Image (cartoon, rainbow, N blue to C red):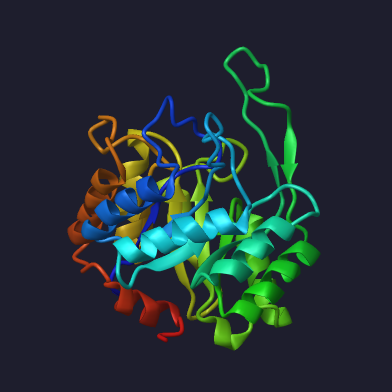
Length: 291
């Protein structure tokens, strides 16, 4: 099997840094990235937060904030690959597009389909007002056009089985240009209204992917995600974790930072008999530009 590419999702969208050990400032992001890099992560998936006092739990689409964070990570981790988030609700995608153009990441997330984004409490009440994470084809195309302009490789985020199948239609339609690298699927499992974090389901999904594609799994949850990480490694998928996705190690203990989570993830790869890809090897596997 191919070497395992490890991605670290450094921080989340709305997680409160007063409650959880998520990095916010460029220095904090760089320090967490360095720990993950030393543990084997070649790719850093980057969200950024508002930098004003007391606002670190809120996302920012300021391209200068994005640049300051990405520059700090690149300085701390020579050769690292940046994977930029792009997910926004609604038609206005000017913020993520400005960030892509500003930092020209090697990879950017491309949410490949819409999802009723829901969570229910034990008493039957909604955890938050029901919302639609809207990603119609026209919106996907807008992102792909700017990624092509900036030399950025799209990582197709798939929250459900139908979205996995839709990516094949995007490819057949010519929306993914050959120079943008191999088709890459990110199977997002564990969102309450999306695909469950289930090893049996995971094993079925590669058959619905385009030929010569590469895939990884983003698993959201607690200690129960780790057997599915191991299944991902066993099946030849690439591996991702970090404080965006979980706070918990395989033994159920709470992680102190991203480095511990990536160390555990690297263990899954090695248990499957797979070596860890270096940044240069990850670039080659994904078909990224090497310059």
